[in-house]
Image (cartoon, rainbow, N blue to C red):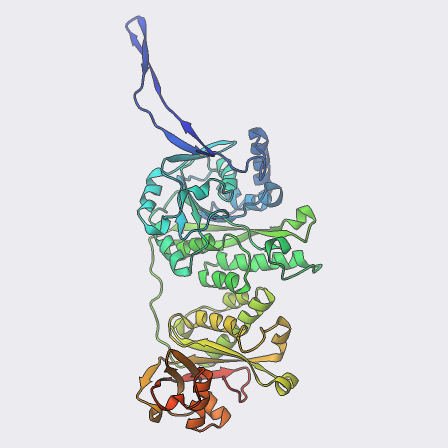
Length: 527
């Protein structure tokens, strides 16, 4: 098997009887046959010479300096040591001499696409580096194999570098301890991350360390992500973005970290394994995280056209039993503080989505998602032109939302605001327009069906019309802002659904809802 070798163990028995020595035959008391994954990137990402490798890793660990206490979890980069080794060492240095009995390794799969987590193939018993072998915790891996969340292909480990480059740091700090290597596929959502974290919680306890391997922003044309172009301050911008994003991970804010990365389209390759770690820590850990290092490859190479950000985070504290999250809360009337937070979230979302900055992470750093922000609700975000642009092009610049109360209000706002920037009725919103638009948010009540148009109360009810597989919605404020009577209102609604204007009169069904509507400013426009 490529990248693997076979290890055999035998026993030579020597018997001594009285003053005579009897050389016994070779007795095959037991044969343990296992496959050892050989290093895939030794000589490329780090030196393949054991003596040099040990010296280089030890030097980086010494340069990292002392830490307060050994961490129970770390996030560390996985690039070539010349670029990211010093930053990785800042995460690992405090492990030196710690009593570690198991290391769980999580990292992204760069070579295979799959859902959930991938464990090494059955039969693999160790991962090797030029410094020796790290045994697999076969029993722990066997327990994880029982769950569908860890059914990814074992072959993904063969060429993968992200976990391998962390091993020499572990070998020089905690020694030859059993490891549980897990690659995380790209197809993972927040709910799946929580499910994986719950399974891993059964394996953590005193002596367990979790290591997540991830680089942060990959910036440049070759990565398909270059929002800062050739800005002279690209290095400073990337360090700032990396630090603020990593701080959401350090704060155990899975939602804030996830939404920042997803909304800004940031190229954090290990975003999904980091999210699994955050969920594990949020539910089964007491302590705190701290960003211990942020740098970029450009500081070594001097090449700012292709540059990668590296961040390290260390978590000190202790593992606990799994704690369930907060129960669902019911939506109530939003007060002034709620409305201010909601509008701030909508604007931060657009800024991070269009300018690829850290505005959304900053919002999550300043707000707790609780109360109404945590209640499930439907929501629409409206983007309005202002000033001369409104007079020239009209008020409405975009309006898209989520009618069903499927997710917490905070998440619904992020998704609605992102979608409103791409309302297909208009050109995509540009970052330069953000200073000239005003936002309005409509938080919806649950919908219910009404028998017909007579039950619709103009100005109070938002209306969903459906007929022949087509549907459209108007928010409650449309009627009052336009001055339409009911027939005109419903005719426009039918036309919006792609139906004849009089289609509402026969065979259509209607659902209605109310809304709490507020904005940065409010003027009449159709939504």
